[in-house]
Length: 473
Ligand SMILES: Nc1ncnc2c1ncn2[C@@H]1O[C@H](COP(=O)(O)OP(=O)(O)OP(=O)(O)O)[C@@H](O)[C@H]1O
Image (cartoon, rainbow, N blue to C red):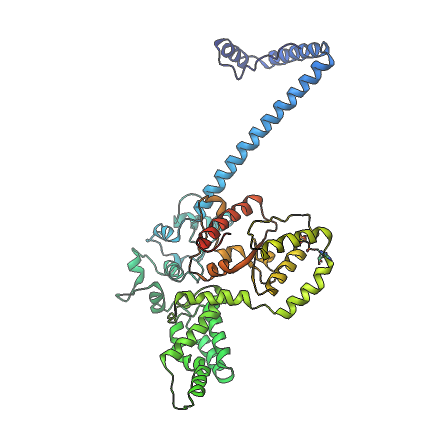
């Protein structure tokens, strides 16, 4: 087979450069003639090829094409990753930094068309209406094609939430201090400033709710109701509500102390209120994983490690009767393959061997069935089996399942941060649960390989950190 001509476009010699220039100056007819001659030459040379030469040529073509495709795919992936990284870093830009970009000379509240959040969408819609478009341009709020973006802040991030609220309501602020200044008085917090400006809904509704409950419910129920209000309704003056209804929420404790001491003259004491606060905090931690001081309330006086009990209690609260039923019904049904895996994992748990097991199989082949049985078996032995999943939906498949992100405080963008660590302290509740766990089962469903691999690496580092000095992961 004649040697393949070198590609002129890749050559950098004077000759090839001259040829390229000549070709660039050719007329279409000349190009057509040249191409026709080239086709004839190729056909002639191929006609002279033996079968082996033809096969070799085709093989080379295939290899070249594959290599080129792989190069292209690799380039596209690299570019894609870069683009994602840039877009994520923009999305993660801190709210406070964005607050600095706020244009202080604009009265945002005066413009009904300014929405918080999907500004890009708004602008795109607005361009279809000439009137609004002109108005957007006139506003000159932000450069380029967007109207601008003030990030959504969850009320849980209290001060950030109130700062944002002030930013969209106070015209012409010149500094953060300016935002906290109302009627010449500088407030310590943005929340106080919001309250002074009457931007917050008052707690009248929650006041009436608690007053109603105080008449009809037990102290335990009122505490639970109060915890729900604190964690999900974000009252602006939680402490005032507590002060008003703390006696109703502490009545059972007072009653118990009076009974214990055989004395009906004992009155409420700070210790009793503290005990009630501890009980309320336990419920708050169960609902939102946040202690009371994150809900605008005073912290109860107890060692921080006592919070551990809530996590541990959660893992020890399984009903042993129903666990036994699960085991009794499911164990005999195990298939041969399931049995091998079941025995292998149970052996590792009983012998405290440690280790990692990856279970993968096509959908509907009984993974969840097997995992549920393993969880039930270990829990029935008074041991802790922690069940986590890659998503909230997946977590519902496992008894006592929680998301890995909430359990281990995984960073959201694990695959972007190779040195990321979970936000768990060694003396936290979940660290104690991890230390006492006989097994940690993590269910990954519909998760891209990169994300679950990255999650496991980060969790593994965290387990090693949390367990260091205790036992091997
Ligand atoms: N050994 C078994 N005996 C009887 N039923 C079983 C057994 N193994 C699994 N099943 C049943 O088969 C169905 C599918 O099982 P399961 O949900 O555990 O599969 P899976 O592998 O987790 O599926 P997917 O990957 O789609 O979640 C369930 O109804 C389960 O109860």
